[in-house]
View (tube, helix red, strand yellow):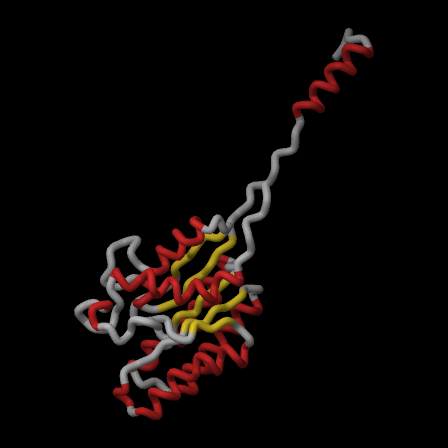
Length: 215
């Protein structure tokens, strides 16, 4: 700035300072990770019809700063979920994980203690990563007898209580006995039932979510 007098230099400096306004950091929405099986993967449904897609819409409607990541796979068991959860936690760093697994364990007649151990290990991994957890309970037909069926239904509540995490007692609560709410296979909920699944899940999820920060 050769040749400028002190007054001119001061004016230039004041101008530069006035335009050097700090740019606020971009706020990244936190992730809600859904770790589930075919019911959460949207089996037999058109894109956008499943309850997980509807969850993203509900989040946006309620003006919450979260993005929903669907890590559900058709046919998944609790063991498969346990094997996948470390990479999913590392990749998405979720604030909340919805664990919607166990149905396929029950349909296959897997040992209940094995299912319980897997669910506990999944919850432990999520909490170690700093994520809150919601367990979504499931029920199965009485194919393996009343004792197995009753104990299977109860294990989700046992795990939630022992691990002190939120529980959705039964994902299909309120419509499971109505055949018209299911697809032709009688197992997977139809599109019309997806909002009801969302309501069951969201009732337990919403208290765990933080309001959108003020900009």
